[in-house]
Length: 252
Image (cartoon, rainbow, N blue to C red; front, side, top):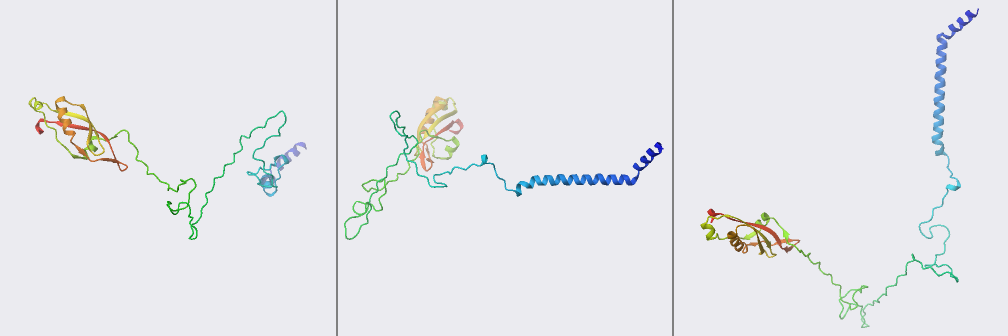
């Protein structure tokens, strides 16, 4: 009889209807648990939004107004130089952060000239230049002069390449080939360092390299050259450049 009872129980558990009911029950339990969790999460999120939050007393701080008299009852202004009460043992402490009162600027009276009186406004009439008196100006009524800014002083000459200065050359003298150098068939190149003045003339010459027989004629010829004046901000300036003089027998 006991064996038959256990067998019947096994048969009931393997029934299709019982399995469907168990699956439906688990599904309902899962849906109910998800809904409960969603409701709890929504309450935690929206509850602070629909209720008025009140901070505890220890977190309530009244901000200090940024200026005197910003709010509340009017307060009496503190004296500019506050010192502690003096007694027999303490000395008054000077106020370091108190600003000293500025002395008022005396105003000069201004009167309008009328036909009945001979008085005239300062700066108008005899010896005046017209216009109201400006505080801080010359008491004699002289107008303020605005000086034109002076051009910057260039201590050293500007450096320009040989090609740039060759384009600005307006007068050139060819050097004379020395007779001795021609007889010995001497040719070569003389390199010079020149400083061009503000008027375009060659102010200073210096031989950098070259044969001494050819250097002297090169110096004599280059000293006669003339350039267009170089300008910087509209003002003529001196220029430092290099000059190359070639001596070739076939070209002389």
